[in-house]
Length: 213
Ligand code: 5GP
Image (tube, rainbow, N blue to C red; front, side, top):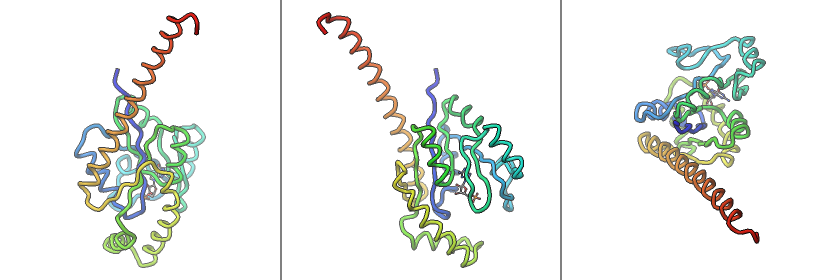
């Protein structure tokens, strides 16, 4: 039987480089699958339906909620974002490690529902570096940059609830570290389930063999 994959949540400040990490990890290793979310926000130039997101109307999205088709959903900047269940389950069952790139409220919900999920928060090494990365994007106005930094302050409050904080200073290093975390988590869960099986067998044997107990 194929071992089930791990569910990995990646969150982080806007400008932390999550997108580049996701792109690179999928190129570099073949055990990962990236979940594609549903959203009510409009596609940005260059984005494609079914590739970046599944773009939905509010009505369509609410129908998905009613039909229990989402693992989690959250409202962010006036739009709905949610993780479709079917794809994630299928990939996990086929042994893939599934990455959800979602914001902090959704991450909290996934952890509550599926406690084995590994939560990873990506951050640049410093606030100044975050500001510089946002400034370099050149697509954003000073007001938008301030808005993103203000939101980062709120998001930082969730950082202690994450299992790992991943500092993205150098892209390749961050990708390697993320993969190492996932490998270590696999090993941990394999070792603990082997230990549980062995202890249970030993306890039963002990009780069978000794009538005085
Ligand atoms: P953007 O509109 O910039 O693509 O994404 C905005 C935020 O929504 C990002 O923090 C992204 O991680 C988050 N997000 C994307 N998909 C989902 C999802 O399915 N669920 C939740 N809770 N957040 C999501």
